[in-house]
Image 1 (cartoon, rainbow, N blue to C red):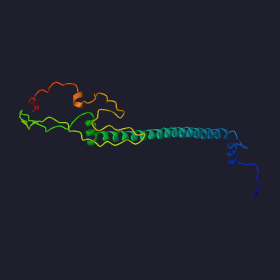
Image 2 (image 1 turned 180 degrees about the vertical axis):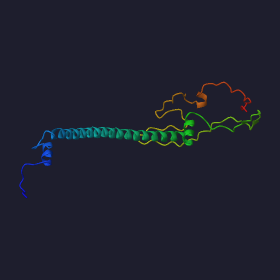
Image 3 (image 1 turned 180 degrees about the horizontal axis):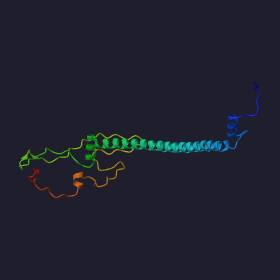
Image 4 (image 1 turned 45 degrees about the horizontal axis):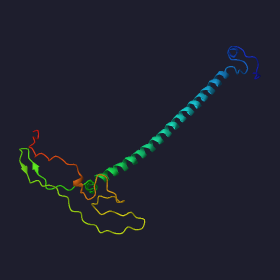
Length: 184
């Protein structure tokens, strides 16, 4: 038995003719090109996707900041509304407008009967406040109920020596109460 390699015979020779002889790089080139194109395309699409996500993230952060600003502004405005709606603030502003607390009320029943005796509201007499000398550089404060502002000029809509009720335009007398139908 010889172990030397020689020309192939028989069945091996037929199979050997089917196999390409020698190294062939022609079959590998399209495959390598396909792999490189797929990898390059994948990297480019990944880069585009990443940049789109970053842009969306920046927009999201800007919108969150804007939402925070608007929420803070809303809360500040709500505090202002709550301050203006407080009973003591309403009373102070009503007094500044010359309004006085109402008298005893009367109620009108659906059948037309009046319950209670209505009385006219009377302005309380202002209590004199002790005058104090203003500190150097401080504006003088007029006494309560005065129609002058801090510079000594009359406030708009008032005349010197007149009360707010005297400065108000004349109104027609209110008609007597009439019975109302409650719609039942």
